Image 1: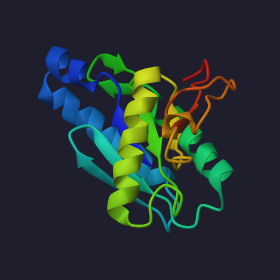
Image 2 (image 1 turned 120 degrees about the vertical axis):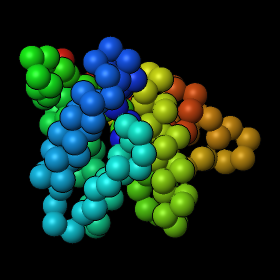
Image 3 (image 1 turned 180 degrees about the vertical axis):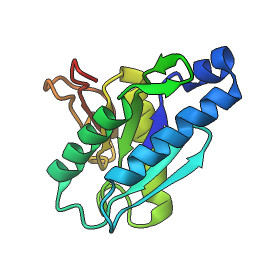
Image 4 (image 1 turned 180 degrees about the horizontal axis):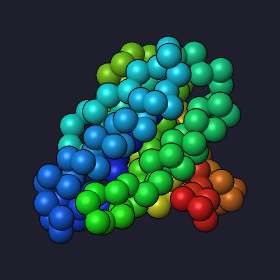
Length: 160
């Protein structure tokens, strides 16, 4: 999974980089505390994190974990007197459909994350392209409407 914090630049711009560092450390701590022993979580740079799930036991489980990560990250972060809420956009690429090596998995998860961010849906799952003529029609949104992209998006709940 490839995570990016939505509107994080505003934290740095309004509250300063020291506040942004506090937020990043708290988010990293939350991600690490909730990861399974066999999983790996790391900061990729800026406000991006990688969350590698080992043997996730299927797409449904990956989506369940992504929803839990969104809920966990979206909890209030206290920075001095300020109470901040940051939400992630998450891109998911699942081996082998989403890529057969680390580079491809990260690249496809990153692309799916940008799609999730664009449509503000919380997370999106990279889907392999179907056929050479119409690869953009290989996925549908959660509501069953064509998305015209190689991703399927997950919805944010009203609580996150």
